[in-house]
Length: 469
Image (cartoon, rainbow, N blue to C red; front, side, top):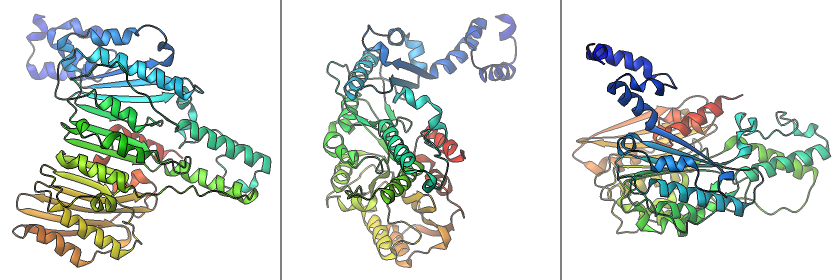
């Protein structure tokens, strides 16, 4: 189109920029090759695929046929494939597993002919139709009677019993676990990053994640986001990640970055705990302890071994830093590790200073086995809590920063231990106070500047939920 091409490049770019901010712009692609390329780059950059469970009993859905038939030029434009697997509310766990297995097999067959790429993310979300309802728009409310009333004692016994049982059952359904295996499923060379997002509230078992990862041989980055459901389930399904996932080093041979984040689920856990306490007060009976230990030494040991070839590792509320360092063998060497982020429940404003100092000095000793280390962070955060210890090194400058609420100080010996890591470097120490009010886990993350510990979309979702009255 001569008229278009005769315009100066800066004017053409400005016009295209105005066009690309809008949706539904595909009809304008024929204007010129430049328009086509720019519009296709936007449209194909992130593909969103919905696969309802009703499709599982029939032939391969058309969306997967279209995915497999994309031309090479458009395949190269795709940077993110988001797959939403939707099941019916109330379906049996076995039915869920069959459907998920079939859907992912269809997906992988569609992608098996795609050439190897350098930056393609596969994100899989698994949810039930009930999760579309308004109950999730109000801080995990489940629509029970008087659930916004802080004084549960004003409910009658029958109302309370019905409320607590309904609330608990709904929460258990939403966060239920499921597993499946992939029988005849091809490998996919194109995918380099796998993301299981926080919005997938179903607890995907480690054996299932393992089946998926072993069919993605060129993975370079893994991001797993889970939920703390300790008030809902007695079993700690996270411990099953040790034998079924992290004990398989073949899954991580090409992986350079791994991020695991557990949402502490504070509003829902607090609500269930409060309701259960009121219920027990009204209806006394012997009750088994529901406490789930935050110490996972076996899991920590497997992760420590699996992480030896990584460049970046971030574990938030998955294993404690104390367990991670405690399970490292004497001969462990992280030859390429550049960034390490861990959490520890020891780091609190009113915590045991001796234990905190011991942990940070242990971390300094472990850092000696990480010759390329540029950043190490140990932190803790939640409602009314935000603490972080950060070590950074760039060329001949090293620094440590301590952030804690209320001006809590560290023992000078801790700083000396870290200074001795690099005796020839300029060493800086900085101590910062945190925000006066820390209302939630996401508020702590933002206060401490730790946005990298969770996917950016999940972080935004957490902020939106936290801002809901």
